[in-house]
Image (cartoon, rainbow, N blue to C red; front, side, top):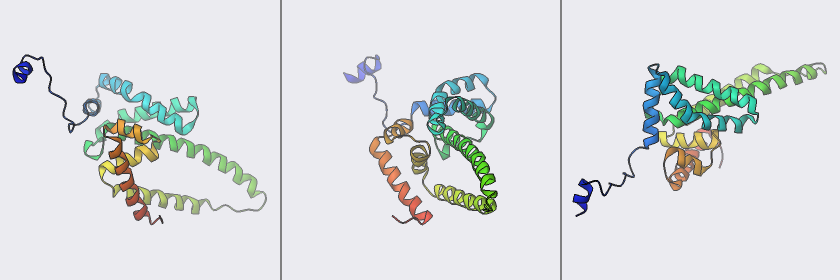
Length: 204
């Protein structure tokens, strides 16, 4: 009876719990079209990810005007680099949000660097020396170590860590973005952070 009803369209098959997110597949298709120069696809992608990009950037910068400017820069970067997107390395959402977080942090660091330069000028008059070369090298080495250790995580762990700890999303939001249960998000984050801690040599 159920089979005949299904053939008549009266009963629909339940979606597979293991199938990829339809939204993510749609986003991947849009990115592929954007990589070919499809402006209509870019407009559609812009509408889908733009609000999330702006929300993330605003959480980092806390400045509405700067946030809008940086969000525009991120989406233009998506347009320019769409051909580099590799679905094997993570979802479109993770790719775009990682890009947005990096651009927002760069803006914060730029502002901080400007403030630091002003302070160094004042301290120089008091005869205090500031070793800019040492600071630059030390920061670069730290960044390289973190990037190397992130590369040692599984793709699923890396996505969860980047969204939660670099993107500023809650566990629940990470689960919604990656289309996975909350318990799975917690497990990925726990395992990923343990591996990062061991890689960086940080004591528990």
